[in-house]
Length: 342
Picture (cartoon, rainbow, N blue to C red):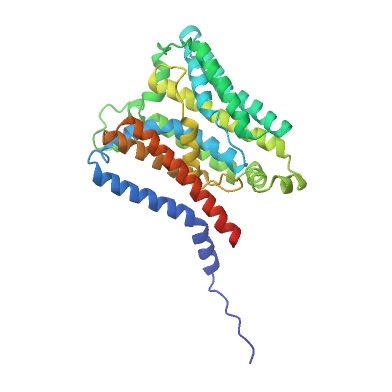
């Protein structure tokens, strides 16, 4: 009697594969849901619409930078200059807007990040220097230039027309003076801009040939090169993308606050990296999902918000962020170890 081969029911394999691929996303959503439940119980003010709306606006800067950082980390690199680029973009744009108009500030501001990205990418790929060291150096350069632009002072007086982008809300801008029952649709414009950025980055990574090259380079740059992929070009392009998102975030920050100082964005790079790792992107490259990065950012922002609402000393907030970063790195290393043992 011959052994019978049991075939899976039609569609069973597809269903199981989909479940396996979605496991990480489901896990992240479960952690986020649990966090929201706990924070709602501990702080009654947490789930109020006023707090949620403020959170949407506040998280927009880190959201946008994290989208670009996801691309870079999938390619196997890091960029810790993003916080300084946010500051340099914000201060330069503020200075030019106050003295020469909105257009001059926008054009100069949006070009700063990609210019630093090209510089970072060129040095990393041509001289084979770790991106952490290169971007550490350019971070110090950008922060220094921000202080040169401001002279150590706050630059205020940004045109009111520009501040609408960062301070406006959807229904208000559309002319609905009485939101009433539609209050929950009155979403801050910065958050909508951040979601648009994520939609574009998602399309770039999942629906284009460039996106496939990014994953290939991050997984194994040698194999990618032997396959005909121009690794250096891909990495430089990724560095440009994260620079562009940092500049966009800097302009958005300027629009929200209405003023700028050289010290803004300090420590932002570490929160961004922690959020991206929590979202499932590997520090070793080749693995990541930009949509899960959103969950990582939300987790970071919710914890900070809870600490603020609980009136916990501000010095402990950085301690909590540090714990989150270490935990995220350890989880990433554990995941890598488990995968290597299979």
